[in-house]
Image (cartoon, rainbow, N blue to C red; front, side, top):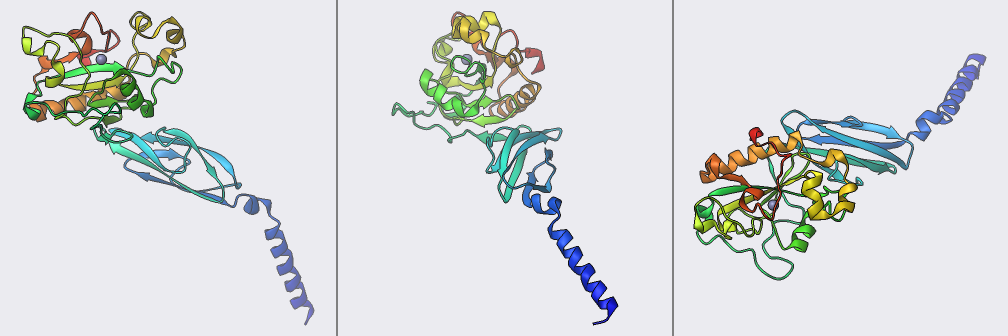
Length: 290
Ligand SMILES: [Zn+2]
């Protein structure tokens, strides 16, 4: 072995030692693969990112214009929230799913056909030909969870607790969830009357599709319903309705109007039908935006 070969060998050994001792490549050996379905962006960006093993990584999903964030696939902390986290052990993967605005998503837990009390959700006596009205409502979990009032996975329980249900629920991000088929009678209107039509008196559920916006009204509207204590715990930004909700509602109403030939004057609020009992969707709802 000549001197040159010996020097080259030494250099190779030093390089190998240097590389294996390099803390950057060694520590950041866990990978997170982020994918996107539909149109939108994520943080970390789509592709492979490197982390120290067992890092808790924050995830953010932002829909493109005309799209809505639906959910995450993968072992994220909260699949329904655009801002969540994932523990990257050695290898992890998460996919942000976006859907076109106006897409109807099935309710968490599926459509409601039978209730927890054993009763069935029955068909409209005249089938979908009975559908003449759209009733706009508001609901939230503000009575039980005023500081976190909009979790979609609480809705089914609230429906059960109050012995009601609605065909659709539109959440704060503009996600449209269907809970009850259009052709079935959902219990959303209750007692009330409308116009000069005695068929509708205490019987609007037969003729109306119910749409619940996740929303909270003014102090004056909420205090009689949920009490002063819960009302005072509501985050001010949780009152009223979001831009995404108006966009989604317009699309859903357009679809229903077309499907069932419902005229504009037959789109009414719950309070219009039952003014002595109900406040929703209330003074914060801007009807001109329909
Ligand atoms: Zn209502």
